[in-house]
Amino acid sequence: MNPPEPINWSAVHERLRQSEAKLKEVFSPAPEAFRTILRERAARLALRKEQAGPAEKRLQLLVARSGGEQIALDLGGLAEILPLRHLTAVPGAPAYLLGVTPVRGEFYNVLDPGAYLHHAVAEASKEKAALGAVLRHPRLRVVLGLEAVLRIESVTAEALAHAQEGVLRIGDDVMLVIDLQALLARLEDEVLEKRPL
Image (cartoon, rainbow, N blue to C red; front, side):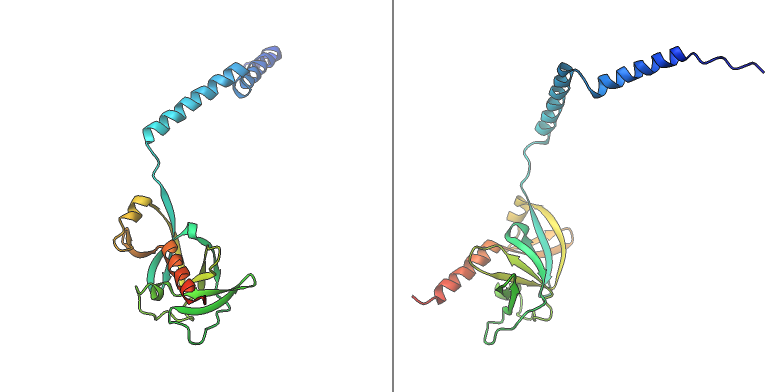
């Protein structure tokens, strides 16, 4: 058995200094080298963007169940989803009005969206509406009654535009897309018609 060779500490220290210098060069480049790296990265990103073409406009839809149907609501038109714990019926109200519920100290009308839009029989009782989708509107206080929130779907604006009579097919699922702006405009017109002059 041969005795081990002695460690050349000078050579070890020199290799460590060289490695440290190389790491410093890579992780802390000189200002000109840093600018070169940034220009190269910018050129690669620009090339990727050109190859990808124009970005498709996509919309986020909340897919929920209401009145036994799947419906889709544009997330941009919703303020929040909340549990309907205190839903109070309104005597003499139309069938589509499930009642009113308090939201942060104000009363909101809770609608059955299918019954309101005449796409479904007005069977959705207040017992079935466990959740409410609070709509964004500066004056109207409206909540859509939902049985369940199923998922969020991302769809192209083009796919949404091709939905036949508001019916959208995503894979095997068929859902009714509710145009929240049209629904709110219709509600606002109804409120204005009933307002005394």
